[in-house]
Length: 80
Length: 219
Image (cartoon, rainbow over all chains, first blue to last red; front, side, top):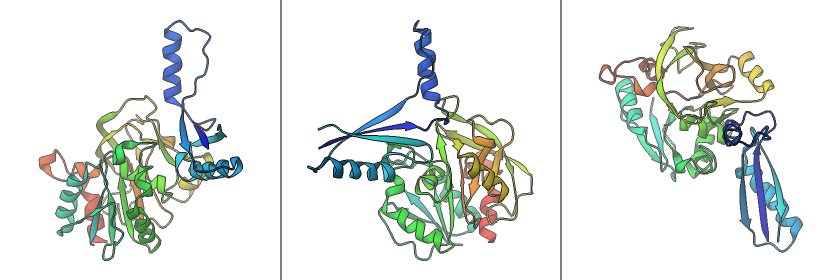
């Protein structure tokens, strides 16, 4: 199974990278761009056949390593 | 005081730490590779700066999972002293030995310059040779030094006197409440972003950081 873990800075945590991307987009003429948040996506190939077990395992991995729960939140999607 | 200095792939500030320890302690520190797990005989574990494991995922995230960090956690639980500087501070927050986290600098730039630090209290094993409220110079060199924690944690740190140093001249990296370094509740674990070990000899351009190591030597 494949799990896709999306890690984002928590709402309220300053995201200077997202801000810089937003400024750059505005400078390129994309005036409609407001707030931008930047995060990361981690794809995991898992030796699991049960989607629920795969999701639980990926969530455990996110809590232990992939995300820093002090500043980040995550979501897990099982895609295949 | 027997000191060990941890070495992870990508750490590059250990040599100045060796000089600082050698000079203040009069003993040779032990270099401890990240795969080692036996810290027996060490009173103080120092985690120097650098870019452990290439800063992959998050600064300090990979190093925090190293075998030696389990031993460091045991060492801290036994009441051992731990000093983490720069990447070492990031590693300590990633392992949970210190609260909070270090975010990308608010201005997004890597900051390599001197800063001025204010000593919040001088009744700890790390700061006894400084004056309370003393301001000293410390070089900083980091891209992710923007200290953050939730408001309740920040209030607790301030309320319990666990803020070790604050940026005194200018809070360039955007740290919450200008916090440059914090202690564990037992005051035996200290993490800070700037580098006191970079100013421990007149040949380095100053000795502003030496009292920290002299304090430890006298403990």
